[in-house]
Image (tube, rainbow, N blue to C red; front, side, top):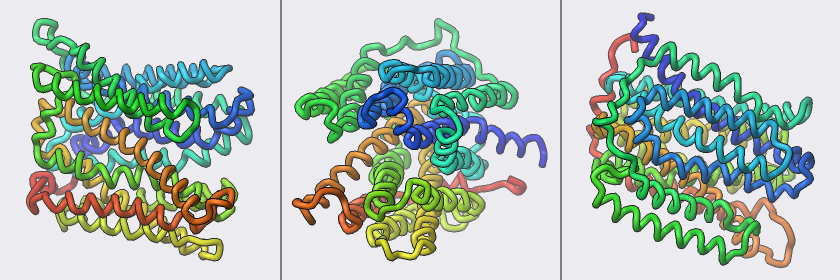
Length: 473
């Protein structure tokens, strides 16, 4: 393998380190919540604030990533973001109270908000279009490994050591990411002060308020941590702030997050058309399956985690053939077929019962991982094909923001659907049963099918320049 081909593999892996860290951190913490609650002597439900604070902080600071990378250089901002995330992780590992943990998670989210979008902009800058399919396949591998390792990594840590180590283990991974970035990613020059545009502080405040209200309200909705009227008020304020920012964005010459990138049709279809399937597969399904297995089917957390791991295994397996499949069938055909297949598989999850063979459950989840990977890799690859490279920062920030909203909304939709289904079937019976999940998974499946309709608006040759793979790539 020549040095150029090696670089086209190593750079995607390096800038994907944040995805690995974030997915590992999220899944590990979910496993360790009971141990943290016992150590801090607080109700487990209250620890949702520690999870919500990270998501909210991530969303608030995310819009600034495009301006910061343009002002100071993408590699500098990427390395600084990883350092801030690692520092926040270290402080979380030393937290003694819930308040301290929430504050340190806010710092961790501030670093995390810039790691992924800036990493993607580096990828778009460093990788030529005809190498992008292969690069994006490599880019998605660390995140899939993080999702797969998380539940078992967290269980092992809280079993043999203190929960504090679930945060402290992020530090060596963060240091490794910074060292590799300095070694293999070329430095991009920062803009001189006279050439740099001024920070849009008013826009940042508006967009931050919008994301805080909307994501905070969605995260807290139905968790009884705040009065329902206050949660509703948060969502209303967030909606108004978002409307005000949209008007501000049209007037401002250099907004903090430029909504005009939605004018590029392929990018628009990827973000808006792909939003329903993202709500389904990265928001609702990961939330619903553990509930189905542990509450509905009475499985132990360990058995539930082992079975759920089949999705991550399927997701990893498909990486080996993604470049060929995209080259053979094209983006439009693959997106439509994969999202419809995903819809059928999600609907089948609602048929799982206590007497369903484990091998059949694992097989369907494995196929679900394959279909999910095909949708996500294809979406993330073709999304930026019609976005000029000088607009890549705004596009990656917009896409990352949409993904965070999709995750939050997916959890809320899943929780509301399960609650409604349970009351509909047996309002007098306490607790959930396996048959409560049938209509829930069908509803979530319809979201994936909805995206297939949007993908039909793509042209058959959209992203064709990305499919011209060179030999040896």
